[in-house]
Image 1 (cartoon, rainbow, N blue to C red):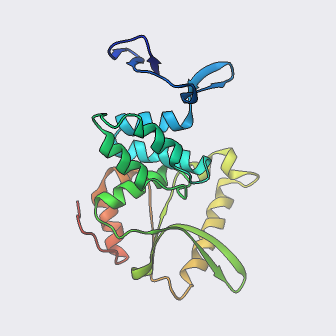
Image 2 (cartoon, rainbow, N blue to C red; image 1 turned 90 degrees about the horizontal axis):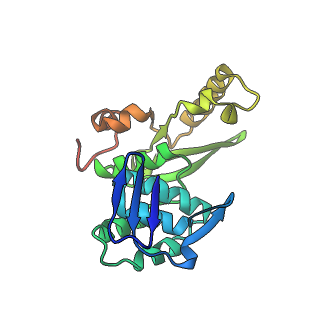
Length: 219
């Protein structure tokens, strides 16, 4: 747990708790369930200044999604600390963040794709056929006619994603969706990745190479 104590002169850490020195403005604090916590904007700024890039982008993507894509509040909070050690990296993470990422896996994948030099993909590209809307795909590489889907396990195992379907029914539904997408004439390649591929970029690079997506900085 991270705590901000305006009375402290320096940051100290204990097992499970980090106490940060620094001030808080009235806009930095909100109350949730009777507990005073930092606002979304302040939280996003703090994480962007302190966390690794992938973690920062994942949180910032979520904040932008909740704020309708408006990054001004986080940018303003960062602007109050222009001399922070990681100010430039935090600003770059905010500029890279997108409200279109729909899961932590997609956010993490975007960072890895950028780091290995993949072309910038279109996010949540919709597809249609003669039967109507098929759905959106996570990453669409238009020049290559290729798509990449992040395949998290939770959509096959957790009740909030399964709804009234069994895991087997979800797998069948996903396969039928994929078949419809593959039949589109503009689609020349379709591949999926999971958390293992994101933590081992060589695996992701091999998947992208299999559908013709070039990399500027292969791992």
